[in-house]
Length: 122
Length: 107
Image (cartoon, rainbow over all chains, first blue to last red):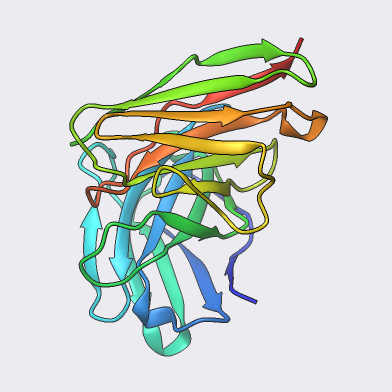
């Protein structure tokens, strides 16, 4: 079964750093783009960016106001989303999702992780 | 950056109704358009890809159409489990932007 499993919920204070993860299984992880999506409380879906684990090619959505860093370790089939200094406005659910293609392609997301709730509060 | 505009933002409908949701891209995206369903507390679920292709396991009452800049998701014979929020997403550019969502509520 193809699936993405994300790390658990986090509660952090403003200014703290954080790295959440997304582990793929059931398919060749390095051959498909992985994307990250934010959903703020009661709001819609916002694309943050994507990474191609094969060569770590990373593209951030121009409309997303970060800053965040996307990375991946293909040897353990895991993608990451990290913050160096969290703000209260980073409170949201973060989803990873697999893009149904690799390399230079135009496929959309087909498989989603279960989401990671990040709460930033003093 | 490609902007995606969905309408309406919400609608009320009854079981058995036919529902249509539209999505407009700010520039042509060919057929690189997906539709997702999201229920409260759950991750989005892919319904339609490449504008009109039905994802495996998705009921045939869901259908998609369109190309270029204008797209439509139609749910025929609305069922109780279809009350949810629906999103379109373009995949023509790597920004992979979403529409604002359409909440389908019970009338």
